[in-house]
Image (cartoon, rainbow, N blue to C red; front, side, top):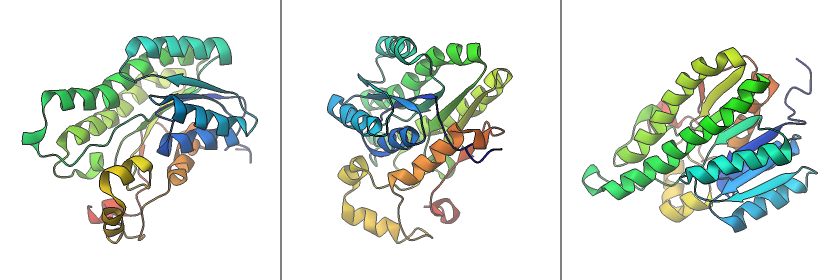
Length: 256
């Protein structure tokens, strides 16, 4: 393995939900390491800001602003990326929404459908659109963003955990299915992370209290998950597939 195995020079990465938070961190770090980026987010302003940061590293960056649940828009996006950037080498299925600590009795059908539509259905069919090109080139890396709660469980979030756990199942299934084409499929199951979405839903005071329970004494910054994504996208992980990497500061050890 060369000392440049961590680089992503000449590759093209599509990252969903990359207009902010972890998705933005993934996009910028992959651009720093040489990849051209397709930024996809429901917020055009957020996507444009991420793309601007990627271009500052001398990389091409395309912007796509739509809901991951719009399957026709996803299909068109993949075709546009193929036309403008030539291919998709890396797919990061990152788009998501906060679960909200809701009891089962408080989860209605609309919320359930939205949760599954964003985390699972949208990414399932987007991956279906991307994989044929990867098969043709006989290479690719797919990274599903799950949650540590998919590993440990949690109360009052069953709709969210069900989606994130399903992503781990898809990771294993796709890893076996696509291995003959040298397409690797892995997952990241993040622990606590400081993002605007989490800060807005949980509040700083609550996060500070939760940090006290973490063996390493803090929640992560988005960039710390981007390191994991870049590793799984690069040749440094060339013999890794079907695995879940959970950077969580030891949260899973103590079951929080």
